Image (tube, rainbow, N blue to C red; front, side, top):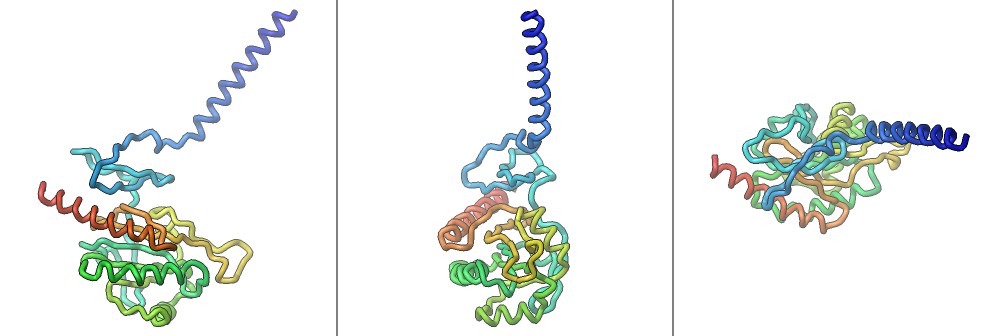
Length: 238
Protein backbone atom coordinates (compact mmCIF):
# COMPACT_ATOMS: atom_id res chain seq x y z
CA UNK A 1 0.00 0.00 0.00
CA UNK A 2 2.82 2.37 0.97
CA UNK A 3 4.65 1.44 -2.26
CA UNK A 4 1.59 2.28 -4.40
CA UNK A 5 1.12 5.58 -2.58
CA UNK A 6 4.80 6.48 -3.11
CA UNK A 7 4.52 5.57 -6.80
CA UNK A 8 1.38 7.72 -7.28
CA UNK A 9 2.96 10.65 -5.47
CA UNK A 10 6.07 10.37 -7.64
CA UNK A 11 3.98 10.41 -10.84
CA UNK A 12 2.10 13.52 -9.67
CA UNK A 13 5.38 15.23 -8.80
CA UNK A 14 6.82 14.51 -12.26
CA UNK A 15 3.66 15.84 -13.98
CA UNK A 16 3.81 18.98 -11.84
CA UNK A 17 7.45 19.58 -12.73
CA UNK A 18 6.76 19.09 -16.45
CA UNK A 19 3.89 21.58 -16.34
CA UNK A 20 6.09 24.02 -14.45
CA UNK A 21 8.77 23.73 -17.15
CA UNK A 22 6.18 24.46 -19.84
CA UNK A 23 5.07 27.57 -17.98
CA UNK A 24 8.66 28.79 -17.68
CA UNK A 25 9.26 28.24 -21.40
CA UNK A 26 6.20 30.27 -22.32
CA UNK A 27 7.56 33.25 -20.36
CA UNK A 28 11.01 33.11 -21.95
CA UNK A 29 11.97 36.04 -24.17
CA UNK A 30 12.84 34.60 -27.62
CA UNK A 31 15.04 37.61 -28.42
CA UNK A 32 17.42 36.55 -25.64
CA UNK A 33 18.52 33.54 -27.71
CA UNK A 34 20.70 35.60 -30.07
CA UNK A 35 24.42 36.05 -29.51
CA UNK A 36 26.23 39.34 -30.01
CA UNK A 37 29.89 40.04 -29.27
CA UNK A 38 30.91 43.59 -28.26
CA UNK A 39 33.39 45.16 -30.66
CA UNK A 40 35.91 47.73 -29.54
CA UNK A 41 35.44 51.13 -31.14
CA UNK A 42 31.92 50.30 -32.33
CA UNK A 43 28.69 51.43 -30.70
CA UNK A 44 25.93 48.83 -30.40
CA UNK A 45 22.55 48.84 -32.06
CA UNK A 46 19.51 47.92 -29.95
CA UNK A 47 16.93 45.22 -30.58
CA UNK A 48 13.84 43.58 -29.09
CA UNK A 49 11.42 44.65 -26.39
CA UNK A 50 14.16 44.67 -23.75
CA UNK A 51 16.51 46.91 -25.78
CA UNK A 52 19.37 44.41 -25.96
CA UNK A 53 22.65 45.81 -27.36
CA UNK A 54 23.61 44.23 -30.67
CA UNK A 55 26.86 44.39 -32.63
CA UNK A 56 26.77 43.59 -36.34
CA UNK A 57 28.64 40.48 -37.45
CA UNK A 58 31.10 40.82 -40.32
CA UNK A 59 29.49 40.19 -43.68
CA UNK A 60 25.98 39.86 -42.26
CA UNK A 61 23.01 42.14 -42.82
CA UNK A 62 21.45 43.94 -39.88
CA UNK A 63 18.40 42.23 -38.31
CA UNK A 64 14.98 43.65 -39.12
CA UNK A 65 14.00 44.23 -35.49
CA UNK A 66 16.67 46.79 -34.62
CA UNK A 67 15.43 50.06 -33.13
CA UNK A 68 15.19 52.57 -35.94
CA UNK A 69 13.12 55.72 -36.24
CA UNK A 70 10.20 55.06 -38.63
CA UNK A 71 8.79 57.27 -41.32
CA UNK A 72 6.97 60.18 -39.68
CA UNK A 73 5.72 63.71 -40.25
CA UNK A 74 5.61 66.36 -37.49
CA UNK A 75 5.59 70.19 -37.30
CA UNK A 76 8.47 72.36 -36.10
CA UNK A 77 8.39 75.41 -33.82
CA UNK A 78 8.52 77.40 -37.07
CA UNK A 79 5.40 75.57 -38.31
CA UNK A 80 7.35 73.71 -41.00
CA UNK A 81 7.00 70.05 -41.91
CA UNK A 82 9.66 67.79 -40.40
CA UNK A 83 10.23 64.19 -41.53
CA UNK A 84 12.92 61.60 -42.26
CA UNK A 85 14.39 63.83 -44.95
CA UNK A 86 15.53 66.24 -42.22
CA UNK A 87 17.54 63.47 -40.54
CA UNK A 88 19.49 62.71 -43.71
CA UNK A 89 23.28 62.83 -43.26
CA UNK A 90 22.87 63.95 -39.65
CA UNK A 91 23.66 62.49 -36.26
CA UNK A 92 20.50 63.26 -34.30
CA UNK A 93 19.96 63.58 -30.57
CA UNK A 94 16.33 63.00 -29.57
CA UNK A 95 14.58 64.07 -26.37
CA UNK A 96 10.95 63.98 -25.23
CA UNK A 97 9.47 66.86 -23.22
CA UNK A 98 6.42 69.08 -22.78
CA UNK A 99 6.33 72.83 -22.43
CA UNK A 100 4.44 73.08 -19.12
CA UNK A 101 6.63 70.52 -17.36
CA UNK A 102 7.86 71.66 -13.96
CA UNK A 103 9.73 68.44 -13.19
CA UNK A 104 12.78 67.19 -15.07
CA UNK A 105 12.24 69.16 -18.30
CA UNK A 106 13.80 72.45 -17.11
CA UNK A 107 16.85 70.58 -15.82
CA UNK A 108 17.23 68.58 -19.04
CA UNK A 109 16.77 71.71 -21.15
CA UNK A 110 19.50 73.59 -19.25
CA UNK A 111 21.87 70.61 -19.45
CA UNK A 112 21.42 70.41 -23.21
CA UNK A 113 21.97 74.17 -23.48
CA UNK A 114 25.27 73.69 -21.65
CA UNK A 115 26.13 70.70 -23.84
CA UNK A 116 25.55 72.28 -27.26
CA UNK A 117 28.56 74.66 -27.20
CA UNK A 118 30.76 71.55 -27.00
CA UNK A 119 29.59 70.51 -30.48
CA UNK A 120 29.47 73.98 -32.05
CA UNK A 121 31.90 72.95 -34.78
CA UNK A 122 29.98 69.76 -35.62
CA UNK A 123 27.52 70.84 -38.28
CA UNK A 124 26.42 67.24 -38.86
CA UNK A 125 24.85 67.00 -35.37
CA UNK A 126 21.35 68.18 -34.49
CA UNK A 127 18.90 67.96 -31.57
CA UNK A 128 15.16 67.36 -31.86
CA UNK A 129 12.86 67.70 -28.85
CA UNK A 130 9.45 66.07 -29.34
CA UNK A 131 6.44 67.10 -27.23
CA UNK A 132 4.59 64.29 -25.44
CA UNK A 133 1.68 66.70 -24.96
CA UNK A 134 1.11 67.79 -28.57
CA UNK A 135 -2.57 68.63 -28.03
CA UNK A 136 -1.48 71.51 -25.78
CA UNK A 137 1.99 72.17 -27.18
CA UNK A 138 1.04 73.98 -30.35
CA UNK A 139 3.57 75.66 -32.61
CA UNK A 140 3.05 78.90 -30.67
CA UNK A 141 3.68 77.13 -27.36
CA UNK A 142 6.93 75.71 -28.72
CA UNK A 143 8.00 79.21 -29.75
CA UNK A 144 7.22 80.50 -26.25
CA UNK A 145 9.23 77.65 -24.72
CA UNK A 146 12.27 78.50 -26.84
CA UNK A 147 11.89 82.14 -25.90
CA UNK A 148 11.65 81.29 -22.20
CA UNK A 149 15.01 79.50 -22.32
CA UNK A 150 16.52 81.91 -24.86
CA UNK A 151 17.11 79.08 -27.33
CA UNK A 152 18.28 80.53 -30.63
CA UNK A 153 20.35 77.69 -32.08
CA UNK A 154 19.30 76.49 -35.52
CA UNK A 155 20.47 72.93 -34.79
CA UNK A 156 17.86 72.45 -32.03
CA UNK A 157 14.36 71.83 -33.38
CA UNK A 158 11.17 71.45 -31.32
CA UNK A 159 8.41 69.26 -32.73
CA UNK A 160 4.69 68.69 -32.24
CA UNK A 161 2.02 66.84 -34.19
CA UNK A 162 -0.04 63.66 -34.00
CA UNK A 163 -0.17 62.19 -30.50
CA UNK A 164 -0.49 58.66 -31.94
CA UNK A 165 2.62 59.17 -34.08
CA UNK A 166 4.65 60.54 -31.19
CA UNK A 167 3.58 57.96 -28.59
CA UNK A 168 4.06 55.06 -31.00
CA UNK A 169 7.54 56.25 -31.89
CA UNK A 170 8.54 56.91 -28.28
CA UNK A 171 7.38 53.54 -26.98
CA UNK A 172 8.28 51.21 -29.83
CA UNK A 173 11.54 52.69 -31.11
CA UNK A 174 12.99 54.33 -28.01
CA UNK A 175 11.49 52.26 -25.20
CA UNK A 176 10.36 55.54 -23.61
CA UNK A 177 7.53 55.61 -21.09
CA UNK A 178 5.24 58.47 -22.15
CA UNK A 179 1.73 58.77 -20.78
CA UNK A 180 -0.70 60.71 -18.64
CA UNK A 181 -1.42 59.03 -15.32
CA UNK A 182 -5.00 57.72 -15.43
CA UNK A 183 -7.51 59.80 -13.53
CA UNK A 184 -5.28 62.85 -13.46
CA UNK A 185 -5.64 66.03 -15.47
CA UNK A 186 -2.78 68.12 -14.07
CA UNK A 187 0.03 68.55 -16.59
CA UNK A 188 2.51 67.68 -13.85
CA UNK A 189 1.13 64.13 -13.92
CA UNK A 190 2.77 63.32 -17.24
CA UNK A 191 5.32 60.51 -17.24
CA UNK A 192 8.14 60.73 -19.77
CA UNK A 193 11.76 59.74 -20.14
CA UNK A 194 14.75 61.78 -19.05
CA UNK A 195 16.96 60.13 -21.69
CA UNK A 196 18.69 61.60 -24.68
CA UNK A 197 18.84 59.16 -27.61
CA UNK A 198 21.57 59.08 -30.26
CA UNK A 199 20.63 58.20 -33.84
CA UNK A 200 23.23 57.45 -36.50
CA UNK A 201 23.03 58.76 -40.06
CA UNK A 202 20.88 55.78 -41.04
CA UNK A 203 18.35 56.58 -38.27
CA UNK A 204 19.30 53.62 -36.07
CA UNK A 205 19.35 54.03 -32.30
CA UNK A 206 22.98 53.78 -31.15
CA UNK A 207 23.06 55.23 -27.62
CA UNK A 208 20.98 56.26 -24.60
CA UNK A 209 22.06 58.81 -22.00
CA UNK A 210 20.54 60.30 -18.87
CA UNK A 211 20.20 64.04 -19.35
CA UNK A 212 19.19 64.91 -15.79
CA UNK A 213 22.86 65.22 -14.87
CA UNK A 214 25.92 66.35 -16.86
CA UNK A 215 27.94 63.15 -16.34
CA UNK A 216 26.16 61.01 -18.92
CA UNK A 217 26.25 63.82 -21.46
CA UNK A 218 30.04 63.66 -21.25
CA UNK A 219 29.74 59.98 -22.19
CA UNK A 220 27.51 61.04 -25.08
CA UNK A 221 30.24 63.39 -26.30
CA UNK A 222 32.77 60.56 -26.26
CA UNK A 223 30.44 58.06 -27.94
CA UNK A 224 29.43 60.55 -30.62
CA UNK A 225 33.11 60.77 -31.52
CA UNK A 226 33.31 56.96 -31.48
CA UNK A 227 30.34 56.72 -33.86
CA UNK A 228 31.90 59.20 -36.26
CA UNK A 229 35.19 57.29 -36.25
CA UNK A 230 33.26 54.07 -36.85
CA UNK A 231 31.54 55.60 -39.88
CA UNK A 232 34.85 56.95 -41.21
CA UNK A 233 36.37 53.47 -40.96
CA UNK A 234 33.42 51.97 -42.85
CA UNK A 235 33.77 54.59 -45.58
CA UNK A 236 37.48 53.81 -45.99
CA UNK A 237 36.70 50.11 -46.33
CA UNK A 238 33.89 50.81 -48.79
